[in-house]
Amino acid sequence: MFKQNLQQLVFAMVLGAAATVHAGDTTPTAQLQRFEAAAGRPASADSGRIFFTSTHGSKWTCASCHGESPTKVSKHASTGKAIAPLAPAANPDALTDAARVDKWFRRNCKDVLSRECTAAEKSDVIAFLLALKP
Amino acid sequence: MMRTPSTRSSVSTPSTPSTRSSVSTPSTRSQLNTFILGLLLALGFGVSTAVAGGSKDFQPLVMSEKYRSECASCHLAYPPALLPLASWRRLLGSLDKHYGVDASLEPAEVLEISKWLEPLAGTYKKVREEPQDDRITKAAWFVREHRKIETEVWLRSSIKSAANCAACHTTAEQGNYNDDFVRIPK
Image (cartoon, rainbow over all chains, first blue to last red; front, side, top):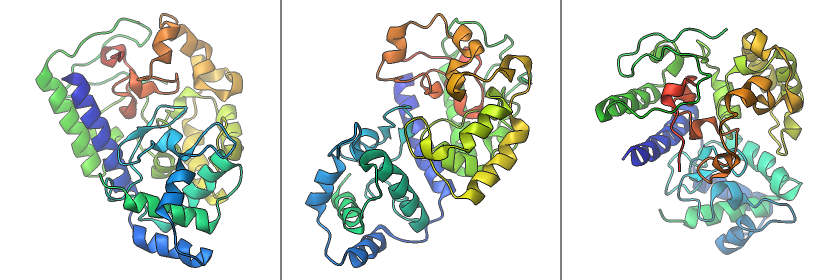
């Protein structure tokens, strides 16, 4: 019982923290369109899924911290900290702050790919996330 | 300096220092439920839990939202008082290489966090020493206070890392590391 309560609490806190901190200034679809426009081609959810779960030569994948199917609360690969779902269908705050989207792509792409991601890669990942159902 | 915990309505007051290693169970379900409700309410209203819940062991009276949103996305919002100033300065000066990950911020954001964090850095005897790699978990006091935790426990998937305070310290998010609230998960 306690464990179940605790899990619910962690989930609520993760969502709550995300909700209180980030005032949305965009929508996930607008972010998809932004990167598609920059890439000059339509995004592919399938390519995004493969990209999301590949190591790209490092020890981590995107999924190491965000989960194979990021519709659930996951755990940071090194610290164990709960991470709110990236899929907009599971987390209404996901991908609703453009500066935050840019910042986390910049940071996390360096961790996984040792470089920044291209606009095409970002659009594919967002297409993958948008296609997920909770 | 560690403050003495004051009485809270929903949870019994811890009266012993945090160096004990015993683990207790929740006294009643209803107390736990009230506590959880309190946490959710505090979050829901966007109130700093430091102010909302009364005195906490280590929680700063004012929590920087920037610190919470930038640093506490990947790990617990570690209490500033648990590292000395020199360690915090090194950490904030090397966020692009932060224990194997890129945690870089805009210079203005680093400055904002520094201004809040530096006056709160630990100055008391226990924390004055700069731990190896500026890791809280390498500090002599941390090692001593966790000496009875077996290696197998640290490695459990429910814990994963000594950096994951909240895995066992159920009230760590509120800055309360008292043993009374420690539950070691299976």
